[in-house]
Image 1 (spheres, rainbow, N blue to C red):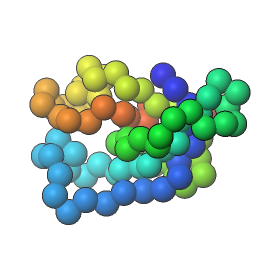
Image 2: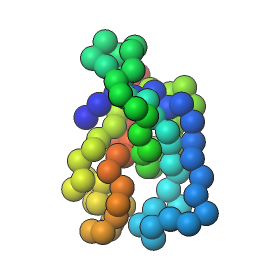
Image 3: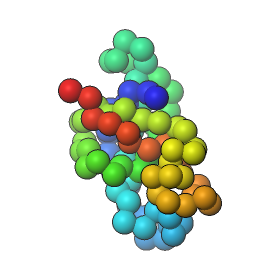
Image 4: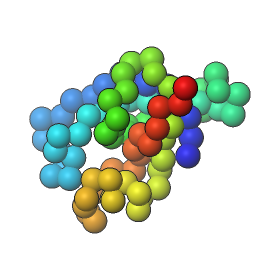
Amino acid sequence: MQLGKVIGTATSTVKHPSMEGCKLLIVQLLAADGASSDGEPVLAVDPLGAGRGDTVLLSSDGQGTRELLKSDTTPVRWSVQGLPD
């Protein structure tokens, strides 16, 4: 699990069937201090409805994402798991 800040959204006219209906977010991962960036932004699926500027809790757990999307063949790695207060 890692904290990140939503910096934008992404749209796709063609995507893997497991991603149909999923909102895609561009998320800047945050370092342990919760303020500075940690590497390059990632693309994450969002079942919770986060928006630009929100802090989110991300997971790169493949098994969890496969269960979330109900697909054993999804290419998705990152998913939003929570919206911390």
